[in-house]
Image (cartoon, rainbow, N blue to C red; front, side, top):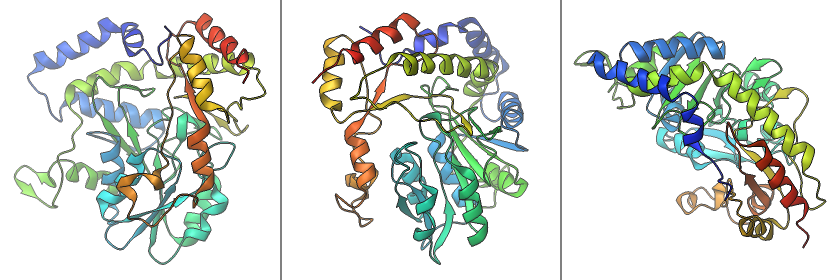
Length: 365
């Protein structure tokens, strides 16, 4: 059986370093907002080429705290891609604002900049593009629109650690960015963790306060804040893994190229990569009108796959109140019926990638 993902194999590559880092924290006697968090924040902001990084509890809270810190709330609207994980919309909802959905570009699956302007009104306060599957959204036109209408741009970079847009790192392409370090991410902790990157000192300072009960000084609370702190153990683990992120991203690029070079089936549409980006391949996602039959075929050949994501955001029961019906966002709907994520992880056996490719090429229905 070829697994869809193997986190254990990846972590075993640096197992001793991870355990040593954890032991160091245990022995320190300091477990919340200490030296490891401070050092990781410095190192990750340097990595992303931003001035500031604030460690928080997870990727959803990173986005939520950014919107809160910008005073986006009740009566406001935030433009997001229709084709994304629900966390993007939840961050907007948690702030009290309304998520407004924009269809994706059919080739990249990321938000289509050409459709954004038509969704802007007097209530619009921000655009929140997602760098889906590790491929940056087209940020130049998004930033141009935002400047024209005086809107904030908040990157959802949860799947794109280290990805490049016109030679610039994700996390540095808007006013602020939210990262997730969920264990499956390219830079993954061993539990929940997240961070905000920005060049805005006032924003960073406010998020540092909001993440810690709204307290800027012990027992003095400036805001009605939250408990969303990156803990010392996860920060220590992330510091170890950050040293390997570029190496592992390059490994993912090589693996993606094996898929791209070896899959040859007229029923399969391979990922499209514009020449102005360098993705980090968080996932390798193909598309087929015969997706369900193909998935069954792969399963019968002991190959596990997943669908990211099977239900479009606007058809989720949780968002039945935002006014969309089936048929309203047709591109997102057909993508949910056709996309399929193939097995993909650091240190995956290259022979397995070729075997999967061959199995796909032999698929005829």
